[in-house]
Amino acid sequence: MAATLGRTSILATLLVGALATACTSTSVPQADPSPRNLTVTIGDLQKALDRWHHVAATVVYRTDRQQPGLPSSAHQCLRRFVDDRADIPIGLAKCDPSGVARLVWDPPDRWRLEVTEANRTISATVVGDRATVCARANGRDERCRRRAGDRLVRGFPFHELVTGVRAVLDELGIDGLEPVTVTHRSVGIAVADCFERASGGSSAVWCFGSDGALLALELHAEDRAPTLVEVKRISSDVRWTSFDAPGS
Image 1 (tube, helix red, strand yellow):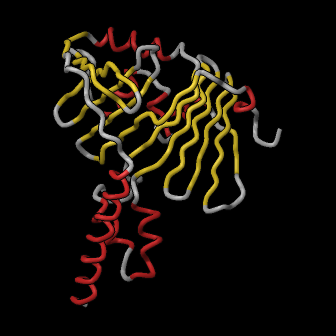
Image 2 (image 1 turned 180 degrees about the vertical axis):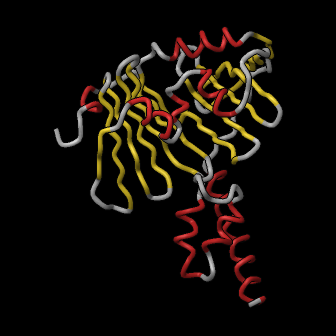
């Protein structure tokens, strides 16, 4: 028994190292612009987000978060699923926190968010009052169903990309009365103004480009692993077919 646990611990440690290497090897170091910190109000953050809600764009984000229900540590997660070498693919698939989110954004009435994590893809398409959520896992056929728009948004991965400031702060237990810090820094492929509101061990950061596009999102809460989203590429091209109902 002890030998088995020892081998599992060693194997999990090696896998965490492999995951860390994979996550960092594709990053390209960028020189940050000169730091410029400002203190503004929650109203200024709301204005910046309102501007995003008037920008049409197609954005592909890289994402990083541990799956709900799994240990927040990749090491602990791997120990849960990996007993021997035959379990390595399962452990990597379930415990790798990286993913991709593709947002087709045509506010105020149309958007589509597709999230791929752990060999599973889930999408939400909203056109006016009509909302559809679809899921596809491990090469299986896609399954779709209609949902109420407000219920869909609240439970969908990375819904914070399309929701308001107050909703995000409320979920994290952060009040909206205190000042907001703005930092000017590099985010992915561009320079951004990043608005941060923090309280206790929780914080939320929104980073906007010069055209108003949302380039990054960082969410930290005391009781869960952080959620990180950063732009990979962005285009002003929005295709109407992205909003077609499945099967139409």
